[in-house]
Image (cartoon, rainbow, N blue to C red; front, top):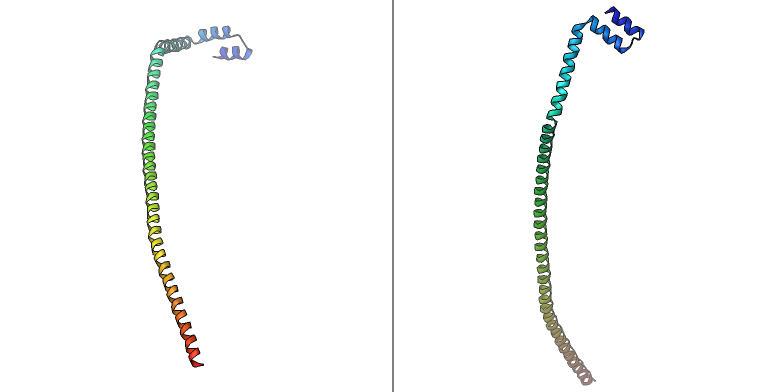
Length: 152
């Protein structure tokens, strides 16, 4: 191995270095050959199975995409159903509010009519009492004048 180190230290070319390695360590060459053949076999295997692996990857990818799209469709359907239910509730509440407003208006009119009748009756009673009071006042004033006239 001393020759290898000296060749390396002197900057010998790659060809000289390979020649020295082969001369000094033939088992290293065999090992390098086996490693090279293994690497070549691995490369060839990967090349030959690339299409199958690519197809498998694309199929798995398509399945995942399909599952996600299916989940998205389900989610969209749920959202649409919730939106429709919400809209139906809003429509129902709107109808109830409209009915409530109509009922309130009817009650207001009924009470207004009722209290107008009561108010008119009360006003008529007050007017009658005022007239009766004024009549009695005139009578008392007339009686007072007669009494004063008799007293003089």
